[in-house]
Length: 456
Image 1 (cartoon, rainbow, N blue to C red):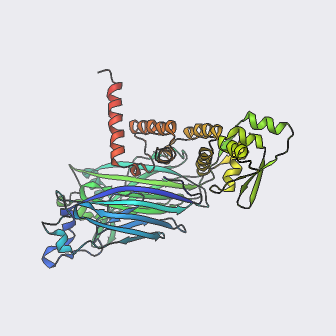
Image 2: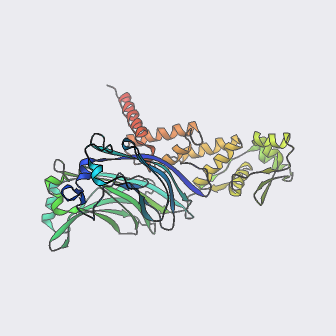
Image 3: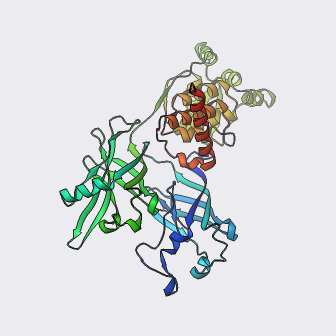
């Protein structure tokens, strides 16, 4: 994630989706001029990312209520030399798309859109959103749930609308919160039809509500569907999978070797203040202040002035020392950081305890990096390493990368944490945004490490 702005979050992304030609062909009637067979299910859904997208290149985003997301991206199919640029604003749940070509040409055997029976669609760009005014902490959730066909049939014989339940998982970030899934093989909708449905249940007591963004996936039938919901105590949200008849129809392939496998991934979000207590003890600043000297030197940010001891600035920052001595400056003007961030920095330099959000701490690091305030750089890096968790490790990994702020020690600590999560099967928030190449390398390192640790 980039941090070039202090009032918005900027998230670069680069990913791709693959669709089988045969699966796309199933959507159309080749005997009827390639007309859609079912207008209610006229697309395939790709794997969920920060956003997911549909066939015929519709880029679709689930935004938060009252919070707009802008997307600058390029959607391309390299094999067909196809590329389109988008620059759109998404409000709540919406999508924009581009027309590829005529459907008949698309499915033609000579079509360049398909390579070895697959179309590969790449999406690269940047998502932007304003920082939320409401403090939110989040936690990743995931599960692979295998249900035996035998158990489903037994449940149907016992009763209509009967449920099977997965194991309950406690959220590590919120120990007082847990979740589980339920599956109903025959939810009765009317006298003639019953449906198979899957539900997410979130259990908690201390929170008033919890927001969840999640998706269900059944790979054997290319089923993917997602949802965003607000959970209150003793509530659940669900998705319709298919008709009960299709669920047990061998030709539909929901069951593989007598087992239905549901992959579930998502994020839980709670509105909660989360601040880090920081106290950077700095002898230089403390001694200058205790000598009774007045704060004789102004730092100017816009229309605001912050007065400090000149010697403090010269002692902590060689950049400021050079400006003050060589340029005979009677003040320091700062234009690319907010007065709030500068105030945080000065307060820490004087050894005063402050409370900082994670975003402000990252901005403070960039401030210290620009002005080479080593005492703050070392102190903040130490604090960030302590804060590494499943909910924030991807965030810190991107922030510390050589392409962003280049913090080698923090970056390596994040990699070590990825390895730990892999070995202990701990879900990580937004890990898919790191790309398949990086994730594959982590899996390989984990396997090599496990092999090295054995006594074989």
